[in-house]
Amino acid sequence: MRTIAASWVNGHLEVLDQTKLPLAETTVELTRLSHYTKAIRVMQVRGAPLIGIVAAFGVAQESLLTKDMPVQFFQRRISKAISALAATRPTAVNLFWALEKQREVLKEYGDKPSTCARRMLEAAKAIQSAQVAAERKMAEASLRLLPRKCTALTICNSGPLATGGIGTALGSIIHAYKHGKVTDVIVPETRPRMQGRLTAWELEKAGVPFTIIADGAVGLALKAKNIGAAFVGADRIAANGDTANKIGTYAMAVLCREHRVPFIVVAPESTIDRACPTGSGIVIEERDGDEIRIVGGKRQMPARWNAWNPAFDVTPNSLISFIVTEKGARRGGRLR
Ligand code: MRU
Image 1 (cartoon, protein in one colour):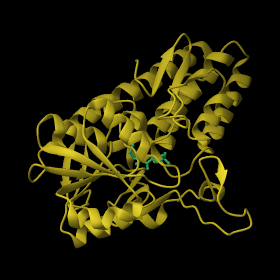
Image 2 (cartoon, helix red, strand yellow):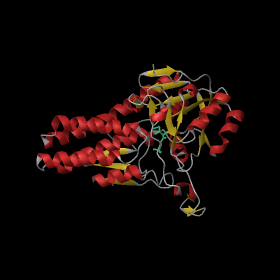
Image 3 (cartoon, helix red, strand yellow):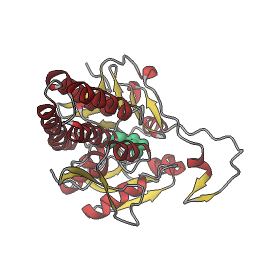
Image 4 (spheres, protein in one colour):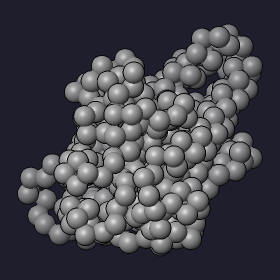
């Protein structure tokens, strides 16, 4: 399947290097396991669903490279590949969900490496296609929730780059724009990794008007602009509906409550972690402080200054108006 974010071509995965966007559109060829782990770790690919898709292809790639080896060796290499991919980033549950799918294939076909490799590639492609189909359903379900013609607010990037399909939250926003229910989008820059520029890049391509704001301007935007709803993605949704998403999402949800603006989470069922009862069980990735101290490749402050760089936060279900998945919209942030 050809998508802008990641396509399997000529026996390997080709991904758009998101660290270079929007100034350069460069592709990276992932042909070895180490390329896959690096691409996820350094965020050449990112966004919960896409991380899962890329990891699934990473396991498939390793199985294709090792399928002619003796069975025990093959099995050991694939198990190691799954562990290496699982260690890349901790918060997005789609990563572990996709790896679990490949572990099941290994369990079933591991004694026939060639068959196993073929099945793993099929499994990775199926995960990708299912995600694309799910996003269309989410966009339809989200459309029905919009109260009136309005400006939409989002955070981070949850568009095609983060998912491989039309996007989760951003897919819903673009769909609503096409149906005349959204007029434009407010895009917080989303420091420190600036995923807002990826969202803006996608909105420009889709012909949707947008305005970039500093993260600190979200409160004033809710007061001063005609914002009718906030749509955000998710990296992991606990069984009670508490939702982990990009750092700043929790603050946005609190501000939406204050301004009586619906706060809508859009994510596939694969983002729901039923083994995790509440948000307090979600592991929050903490990234290098230099992502804060260095801006645009230039050091802005001494390395000795303490920096805390959590990449995600958890929004309690009580602040969530709806959770939208491919199964439809659940009211109130409650999954059941
Ligand atoms: O650190 P990132 O860029 O991988 O984080 C991505 C997000 O937080 C997205 O909003 C999230 O994955 C949900 S939407 C695909």
